Image: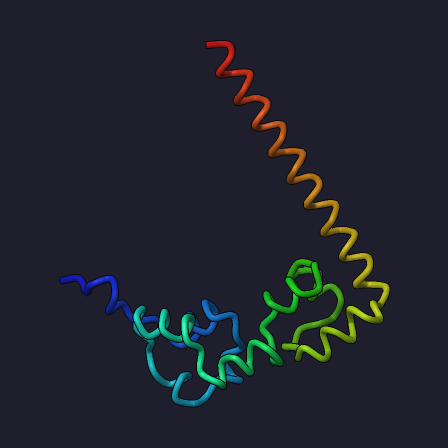
Length: 133
């Protein structure tokens, strides 16, 4: 027996991940109750004040922190950042980047450049294979 797509329930941890928020900072009711897909879509479409506040000021989970700093989650760990950060803390790091952050941004830029190079090579190989047919 399968449930309908709209009534699928997410554990609070998965719902928080999809919303991009740090679960322990959410209201207790959110942490204790599975969320249906329809409820999750409603939260995304019309976020309540607590959700808007969390997204605006944090604390933010590691994927959000890493994205805002332009580095990987592993880069955060190498830099010693293991706890969630607030928007103010993230902005402070961006305004006064420590040496580890500058190094991690350089690594991230190199990774992106290599990924682009590989993608271009893949496209060129596909084009060559199509023209050889």
